[in-house]
Image (cartoon, rainbow, N blue to C red; front, side, top):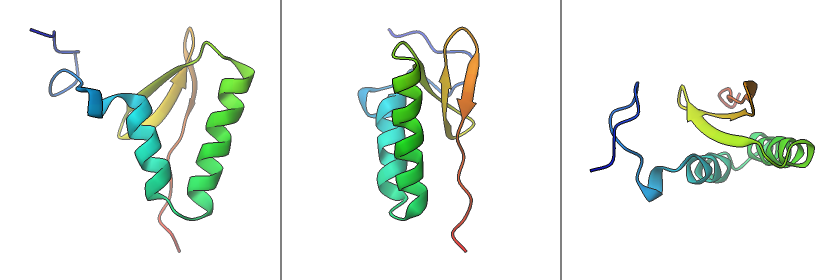
Length: 77
């Protein structure tokens, strides 16, 4: 049995990995917001190759020995 992470509904499946969720968010934002999120992600990985991608508060979050950056999007206008 895979242990449940505190604060979650259950263990992450392969389809629920943060990397996959971020990929899906980028694909789902088929306008400038998706392009910007993809660019932000690339810049963060370029600056810190050991960064950890997480999914918190229903948004992508990057950390390494503490929070680096959360990323949320706003509705299209």
